[in-house]
Amino acid sequence: QAGLTQPPSVSKGLRQTATLTCTGNSSNVGNQGALWLQQHQGHPPKLLSYWNNNRPSGISERLSASRSGDTASLTITGLQPGDEADYYCSAWDSSLSAWVFGGGTKLTV
Amino acid sequence: QVQLVESGGGVVKPGGSLRLSCAGSGFTFSDYYMNWIRQAPGKGLEWVSYISSSGSAMYYADSVKGRFTLSRDNAKNSLYLQMNSLRAEDTAVYYCVMVTANGLDYWGQGTLVTVSS
Image (cartoon, rainbow over all chains, first blue to last red; front, side, top):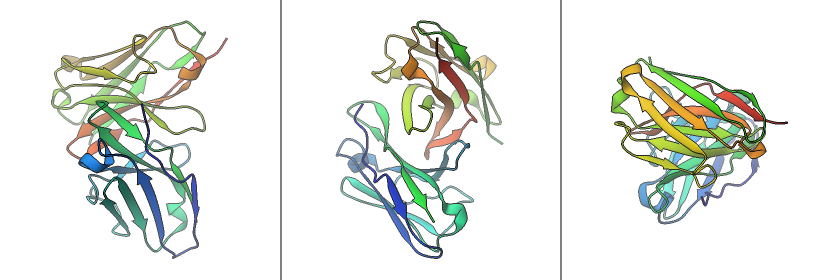
């Protein structure tokens, strides 16, 4: 199954802002939008944002998501050491009837 | 609260079989679609399979189609993944994932499958 495209790594300083991107096509990101997941080493992924800019309860307001066409973005402001993790985007692909993922972005703070 | 607990992982030789289980609690299991998503060591996430809430519809990734079979027993709040003809590239942590209106919402802790001679 075709995947989504994410940059492999992003590096930012403490209290700075990081913007992570995720590019798909009209069957996935451009259709229903994207999810964003955070994974710390040794732990399962955790849902951060769903369908473009909805946050589950308990997720920091420092995180915001958006979509423009076939590209989704996750912006994290006021970066903290705990934000250092792998970030994955995912979307439901209506033409494949499958969930597709990006390769993940390693965020270094 | 929602809990998903996987079991059944282990070491198996190439060509062998393994059956993974996922026990759900803290929610009405029969109301939700369920997935298996895997992660090879040091790699990204890969969707494997999902099953509808009733168990009437299943979808599989091309990489496992014809080798893996997904099923569920709503009376036992359990999800199963029968894995046959295992290959080295199936080595991964397998996560049981519940789908809600928010998408891939709840994840288990995962169970490690190692395919090695």
